[in-house]
Length: 91
Image (cartoon, rainbow, N blue to C red; front, side, top):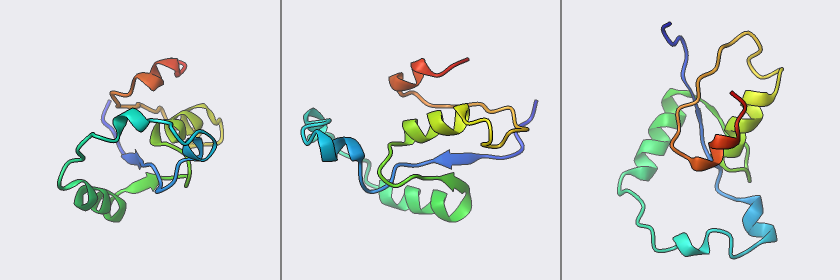
């Protein structure tokens, strides 16, 4: 089966979890982000269809779109991601 469309899920600039739990992911503050991350993000936004819900992480957006029966109802969806949080997704 050949993919006919790519939809990228991105995280917005805010995160509701940090609003209610300020130390959420505080241990990750020393992570060095890739130098071209901003350029790559802009390229994706400018060139692909994206799903982005401000305040919600991309893995949550993936979960919502995958389990919402009205989200692309006629599509067979394939999620490609290394995030361990997605192990909870129904197969």
